Length: 124
Image (cartoon, rainbow, N blue to C red; front, side, top):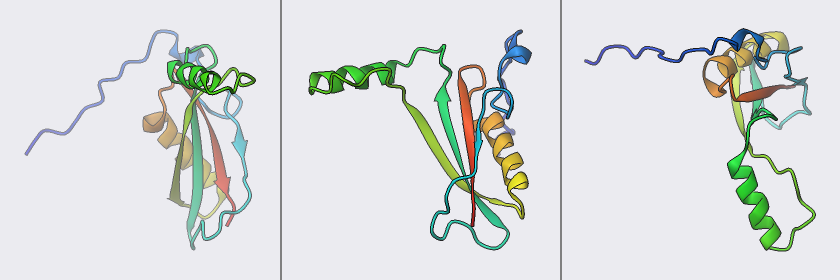
């Protein structure tokens, strides 16, 4: 049996001043249109959109933008790449689902130093 894994991440000295993806600190909370079959009794569907902060260079976005230009799509600029994480949460109210999604984003889904996130709680 292996010992339990420990969290070795360290926050930078200025981490307290950095936005944490929480409402009022750079994140946006959106209630999206319903997704067919999205929620079952006591469960809510949540989407977390994770992207690099504006001040962080996005090499993948720059590469895709260059490739699109080579294909003749010169009008596209400022391309940034993020990711979408979608899951169900055991929750009765959107506020509960929001709190669970915030905790998941803060603890694992996003790197608070480099990324920000938006959360959508999908109605049933």
